[in-house]
Image (tube, rainbow, N blue to C red):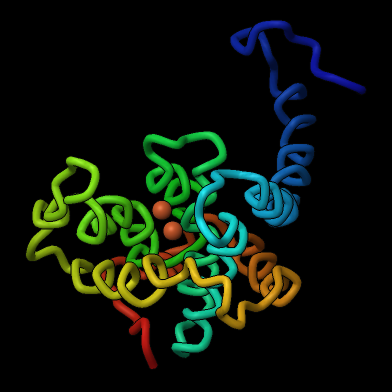
Length: 197
Ligand SMILES: [Fe+2]
Ligand SMILES: [Fe+2]
């Protein structure tokens, strides 16, 4: 069998779907490599800053690592702006959707909301509400997102910072995306790990 027999999904049989399954598993195993490639393509995106989006991503991850944050945090910091490629108006939600099956709930939430929390630094310059974060006041991960933005995101536009290269982080990206999707032992609903150790 080289391909399925059906031309509409409703007509597929057990053999068709059994044939597709290992192909889907094999394709999914390439996620980490595709993400690392996408990250490199961020080097050409969004000009005007003193660092590229790739440089910003690597610097955020480097700061996370130097703070002693765990692998979920470092990989989340590395990928937090990957949504800029295809979702400039909800890049935070896009990145969170990629991370969600493979990192702690805490990290997914912070990545998903970081756009709103970042507003505190520039909203008043662009006619947006700097206090957009207040809609999440009292949330269990509110302070984590405050710290994520203050320590790693808003600070990582410095061309003079000693930023580590993408190769330094590749093994951890592979480790995270090789996890079993939605493993409760990874998602750890409601649990918090510190950003600074
Ligand atoms: Fe962002
Ligand atoms: Fe960012």
